[in-house]
Every structure is written in C-alpha cells, then in structure tokens.
Image (cartoon, rainbow, N blue to C red; front, side, top):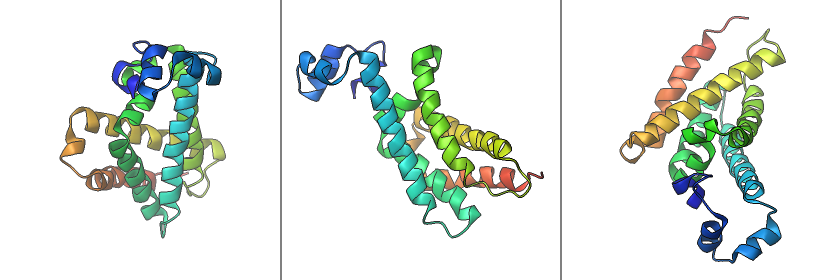
Length: 177
C-alpha cells in the first residue's frame, strides 16, 4: 500500500495506479482526485476496523469481556493490517488539515460505537461519548507506539490487548457519576 509507505503527500497517482495494476486514467474514472481516493480509502479502512470491533464485542458475555474483546479486535486488526493501520493513524497525518479531518471522521465513528458499550449508570450520552474518545485514544496511541517499537512482532496482540484492557477497565470501573 503506497500511501502507508510514502504518506499521502509522498505518493503520486502514477504510483497508486502502478500498485493497483491499472493505468492512471482508469483511476481518474473512479476517483476525481488523489484526495477523493484517499478519503474513500480511509473511510473503507475505518469501516473495516469498526466492524472488527463490533463483531468481537458481540461475542462478549459482559462488560469486562466487551472491553477486552474490543481491544483484542483493535490490536489484532492493527497487527494483521499494518499498512492499513499506518494509513489511518500515522502521526504525520495529523499535521495536514485534510488528512486530519478524514481520520477524525473515522475516530468519531468508532467512538460513537464504543460509547454505546459504556454502561455506567447516571452518565449522560455526552459523557459516555467523551469517555469513548478516551478509550479510542488509548487504543490508538498504545497500538501505534507498540507497532513503532516493533513489539507487534514479538508480543502477541492478544497479550498486549489484555494488558491495555486491564488498564482501561480499571479506569472505567473507577468512574462515579
């Protein structure tokens, strides 16, 4: 995935076309611009990540398992889809307003979904959503650092997810409305 290797600005439509095995005019038949292609790619990858989390959490037997299964799905996806994860969450994407907006849209969708899983009596919908952003931020930042340090190749994603979910669960359990 050339966007993962070279970043948005370092990737040309010629490189994308070559990697996809098509010509540049064929790309422009489907996408009006590199930005449109990138936005659609980010939306598709974000939907896949969200779907992986939702499917995993649906198998949980209670709130504690929901947290762990959600983190397992997130870290499993980040590990198995490394280039896709880098497209979504590379630190360099935050400096560009267009890229940051596309990534924010993905984070918002995932946070909205996570908020529905937070069951703390007395919290408003807005408070749940803010906490969900915290959980998503925890997953994103720890997985990015974990992969950057190369730990993803030596530590199983399930073991790492278990550690991070313990951290998140302990924090969520301490919340009092």
